[in-house]
Amino acid sequence: MKLSLGPLQYFWPADKVREFYRQVAEWPVEIVYLGEVVCAKRRELKLQDWLQIADMLTEAGKEVVLSTLTLLEAESELASLQRICENGDFKVEANDMACVRLICARPFVAGPHLNMYNASTLQLLKDNGAIRWVMPMELSAATLADIQAERPQGMETEVFVYGHMPLSFSARCFTARAHNLPKDQCQFRCLDYPHGMPLQTQEDEEIFIVNGIQLQSGLSCNLLGEMDKLNELKVDILRLSPQAEGIKEVIDAFDAARKGEQVAELPLAGQQWCNGYWHGEAGMVNVSKQFAGN
Image 1: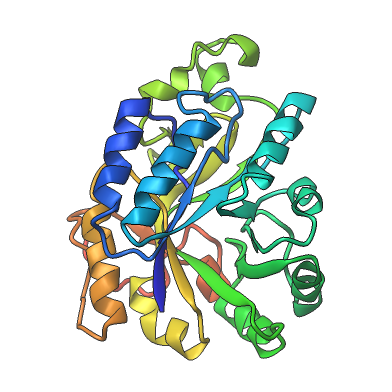
Image 2: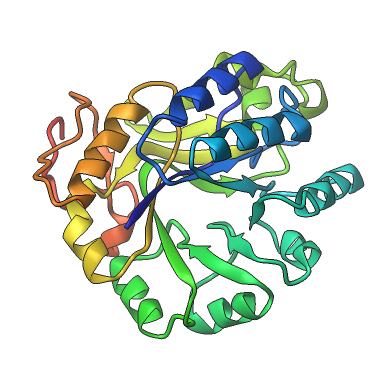
């Protein structure tokens, strides 16, 4: 079982991104996803910059995959997508069917934002070049078991096991709207929120994270306590999502757990988790109640 570091969801300054991935080069993850998946206006790093980071991580022994936008809204974004698909050196994670079309049967990863809910869909994607699929956030372990039983031969399965889950994308920018700014004149306010912008209910419960045009789960998904089930279901890769603080400790915990070591909880005192989707419940629920701070 391998560990992967998913694409960076938040908008960080270029220097911070480069420093982050210099550290990632030393971490116990086998696969690293790079690139912008949320908003095309986030241009602190251009494709050439991402490719330089990719080369550095490859030299460190990592498998690098270039992730693509989830919501395409302009011809310029389609042209940028085509350049990524034609990079010639690295596999691509497709988060939109336009990307699948542009890949033209070259090996690619079917990202979690494609609508993949049965083995027939996986077979269709495999016929078009997919070598791996990332399970959509809202699917349960029971559904995964059904799909795994009919999964196309040779296709890897990757599951999102830690981080604020990306739930939806909109043509509107929620962060800009929160500051009474139009989307086209957002002043790049996402840079002010390296963890995203928390959104509370009237009862002060953190229900969502606002991240530009994206809404994330308010609580971080955490499937550390489900390692036995993940092994039973023959999951090939565990995906963890980058965050501004504490992700190295989280990766170390999952690394220890996959090696069979006993890990009772994540080393982030007081943080609450959710795992409802995995158990077929509402996503924000914590079914097991086995971690500290709940």
